Amino acid sequence: MERKKIEDELDCKSNANKIWASLRDLYYVYPKAFPPGTYKSIDVLHGDGVHPGSIRVRTYKEGSPITMFKEKIEVVDEEKKIFGFSIIGGDLLKDYKSFKMSIQVVPKDDDDDGNDQGSLLKMSCEYEKVALHNPDPIHGCYIYVM
Image (tube, rainbow, N blue to C red):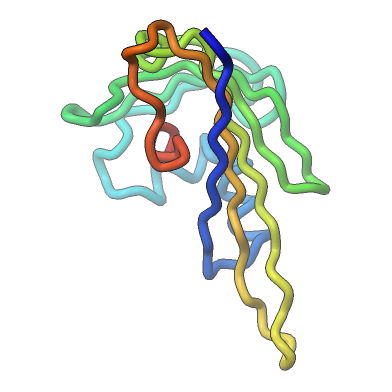
C-alpha cells in the first residue's frame, strides 16, 4: 500500500495563542471543552501527557465512530505552534497500517485597527491503508481525532 497525505484548513475566530494552549494541553482541556459524555476518558500511560514521547489513550462515548485509540506525541513546537502525534493502537489501526496527524496554529494578521482576526488551523494527516477497499479518512481526518 502507498502512503497518502491529506491536508485541510479550519478557520477559527479565536486567538492563535488560546487555540495553541488548548491543543497543546489537550489532556487537561478537552474533557472540559467538549459536551459532557464526548470522552469517557483520556488517560496518560507514559510521560506527562503533553510533551513528546508521552502516550495517551482516548476513549470516546458509546455510539461514536471510534471507541478508542492510543496516541504517541511526536512533536510539540512552541515557536511554530505545531502539535503532532501518531496512532499506535485502537480502532483506527483496523483500517490503517499507520496514521499520523499534525496540527499547526497560524495567527491571522490583525486588521488595520489592530484587532485580532483569529487563526487558521492547518491539519495534515499521513496514513497507509491496510487494504485498498478501506476508506480514506474524511474531513481532513480531524473528525477522527477531535
